[in-house]
Image (tube, rainbow, N blue to C red; front, side, top):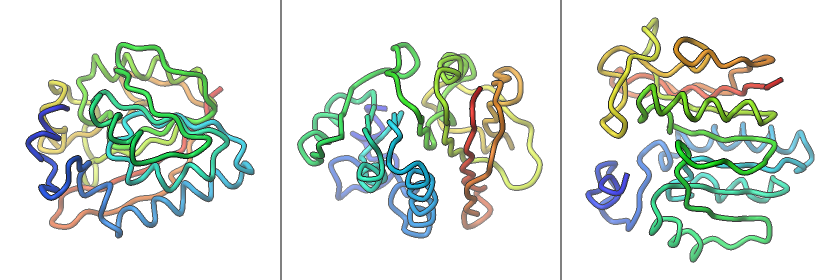
Length: 205
């Protein structure tokens, strides 16, 4: 993750930190934010939100006022330090944690936006085992168009599964996450056949 930002592997050479097109293209971000804001507002701003992999916070900065408390997490320490300097709200906290190895804080709702897709199956499994402690999971994943074989393994940090015609599905083996129900909140078809971004709300037991 450190090299991704240092070498601008997700673009944004003019920025000190840049979390990629998926966090900055209005065609992607505007409908996503409208959906998430509507969900948070439907709970009268009563939810404590834990944003795992908050990145440059270009998305999260729009959601804090719709939450009771917003905890933004990332593994890159100087990115978290930068976010703490730029973004200050009474209900906002930034924490530098490794979501794979570290304990996660109590909250009502987890936001995981294009994070799991970069991780190996072993690392995803470590994260998903922690998700049962929460009431809501809002998950966004980059997956192929049409049918695909879920959860082909990769090495963490080395791209995503798209070239293997695969993507993450946390309900399928080897993860088999048990949920109460699910609702697809949104889908964005990327240009040039580069797959789709799908956002799903999972309600946990």
